[in-house]
Length: 171
View (cartoon, rainbow, N blue to C red):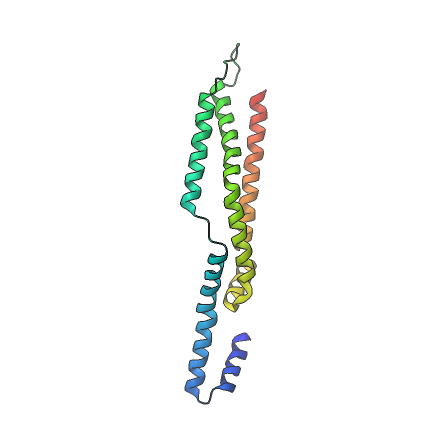
């Protein structure tokens, strides 16, 4: 309906069929190609995307720090020896400590990503092409919001399982 109304508007303004065709082509290019690219450029300037290499290096450094701290800590051996080896208990502590450090290290990147998503959500309705694509993705159930929600749910389940295992290891 939008494109039909746009074609009628262009035909009202144009004097010849060639001018109308060029006008419709120019309007299509502007709305489908240029406007989404311009919106993405504005979002990139206002809230730049997260530097994935920097984020990965920060996570590696945190993981190495957690391992080094745990290996330098002296954990006394239990007498008599428990059913669960102390090495497994130490590994569980290393994973828990690493997870806490990773969550702390990810906070600035998550905040930057949230700012970017807020900008992209605001610019979503600038172009009919972006709005249509977003509506179709939401209808199909494959939009980014659902994927992020699923990712958060899976991570929450992983943390619950780790806590359950940790309680078992502490016995």
